[in-house]
Image 1 (cartoon, chains in turn yellow, green):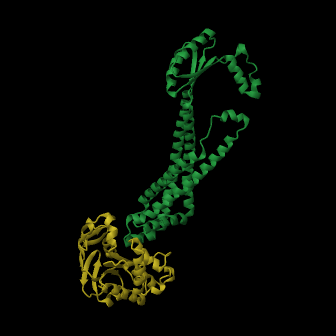
Image 2: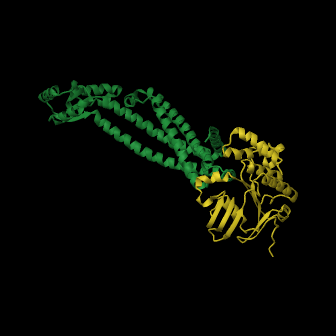
Image 3: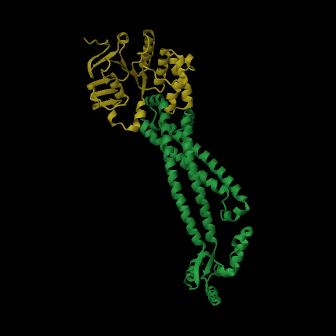
Length: 228
Length: 303
């Protein structure tokens, strides 16, 4: 479903963020992308979201070569992916319900669909009772739940999580991981970039470790890889 | 896009306008000022054009005879006139009659002309010709100019030409000024949109990740620009209408001295002027707002 073929990314300032990366992720897989800051995790995510282009190599998602995608097609491509970030990125002047409904409005879902889908997703992430709260009235964990609800409300086939637990304490992080795991069990492919060693080690999922732009380890049911 | 989505775009456009009021106000004033000047130009040009077509439909020609023309000269000119085609009527006005008429027209100021008498009368003898149709004017003017005892042929086209020159000069300078003001308005609207984009940057960023199309993101800002232009158009039409009706009132009750002077300035009725002007304002206003907005987005909204 996702395939990186000899992907290299060199930024304009000369920084070689990814170096000849080959990576394959099957449908429904759960993959941790780990590595220290600057290892290339963010670049990988940006490439997947088609925010940037690889310098060389090819990137396929659902059998489509992203380099051959027209500009006009990018929004529709992104609708197949849900994204969550470390800083949640909720709109502060909209309630939780409105934040999630906003994602459906953008893809021009019908009002009926929105009214059916939003409460369902909110109760799935355990936020049904806070639907009318504003992000400022929520804890960090609750905000990330809301962000997750927004990410999956349009039923994407891939969930991309960029340090989703980075701002959360470990108990809350575990709660969030439960939800992400649940989303994965529904058949959504999950790509999660993280620093959180405890989480990676407790989940027993595939772990791909980056170091200075190259993959130095790729393990099934792996652990956080230590550099000496 | 769905109707509901369009409604959303319009609503967001309004929100943008009201969210940064100060800049919106500046934009609206700038566009209103530009349109107001455009309105002045249009008012002047429309009225002048009207005056011209009035004058053109007048088919009067005046032949001024040379000073010292004697009675046989006068009767030979009269014979000529009688032979021409298209003459509806003609009247001979002797220099004495002209002087009397002049004194009459000046009413209580006629003492100023008291020094003029038959022996030093500065006015020439003249024939006033009324032509059947405007088409005959040119031929008659040619023939009349060829007569030896005719000093000068005056007809409405002379006046028309002068007024036409005034109109085109007004149009030229007026439109240049409008151009400058429109450019200024565009710079201000451009900045307003930039600020609007900046204040919505988080939202825009999220929309991109969720998969909003470029135009879904752009439309609210385009609406904002168009609304700014539209508000400017409404305000400036109001101002032009107000100014015009004040002017109309002033001209419809002139003081006795102004009477003669203003007689030729017969203003077009307000509704004949204000509807085309408002239509043009709305068109130009929204277009300017739209273009400024597009330019701003090209630079500041990376979608």
